[in-house]
Length: 464
Image 1: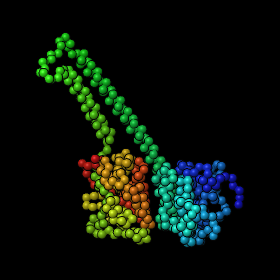
Image 2: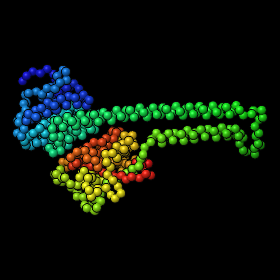
Image 3: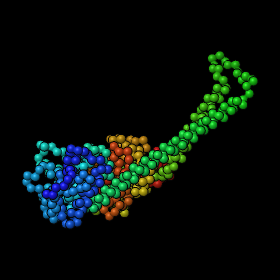
């Protein structure tokens, strides 16, 4: 093996840094992807990919150790008996099933490495008492632990990409290293643009607030000056006549009453001006009335039945509309509404009831503006159906991925839009239980998400 100066990635994660901030991890990881994109273009795949095979040079360049050379794709590449236990964590489900591998097997392993870079540890608990057989079963069937349990600063858009890279079945997995790179670069660009827009909006709001307070103080000074001038101009030679009071009555004078009236008028004026400012400042055309609960219908608008699909294998092959309850439990449907694939959303027979519409990406963008990108304004408290201040009351209903796996109940709600992203994906709105922001993402059309309908109504809005 040729000597290369530098540190292996597993040592950087394990001893030197721990979880790597995503801003630093992504440039390194994109270099790793570029190396594998080149290997894949030449028709090869890596046999056993793990952080100990990846070297970071002193100038932060990536080198792939050549002790595990690339092999032709289509061959079964399962480590031999006696392979160290740590290697198993990075194997794809098809590898541990001893099936033929291709570049998507490398994509899975790379997704696990990105997970470890960001979380500081591998997805599954590394319990020394756990048998290799149990670990293999976890790789085949168990969803990865959410990396935010170990590093809460990982952005949600990046979590989605990791989950897509490590999908159990190949049809739901990222196809190529080049696509992986594009998703990361595009996601980072969109995320940083949103952060910048939020900072600029906060600066603008602060300036408008300061300008308003300055004007209010100025008007208050003018009113005080006018009051003083009026008092100076009032004749003072004659004492004000005070009518004789009956026994037991107060002796409050008229000038004092006028003073109180003036103060009340001033308070009223400030309140009225503040309210007017907020209306002008808001300047939002809220003309959509939103359903108070998630959609829970099992018929299209024309009366045709929408099939319920419980079986995960059947769900994974669907190209037509279907619905399910979370974990196939009817009580979840009652509380959270049904989960629909996008084929049901897009069916020409109409998923939304008469008079209602499925929101497009544009309607979701307008909703985000209405709440100033404050996701907390839309969410209900956990376990309290329909109990937030504005009546929108989004429940944390979770979702179902394109392989039929249920995930994120009481953690994340996902809502389909009617807008297609490309031939295999569509836009959705995402909220996190612990995150303040609202996110527009896109997922495969075979995912199962909630639907929240709206209709145009000039008299009602989202915020009541």
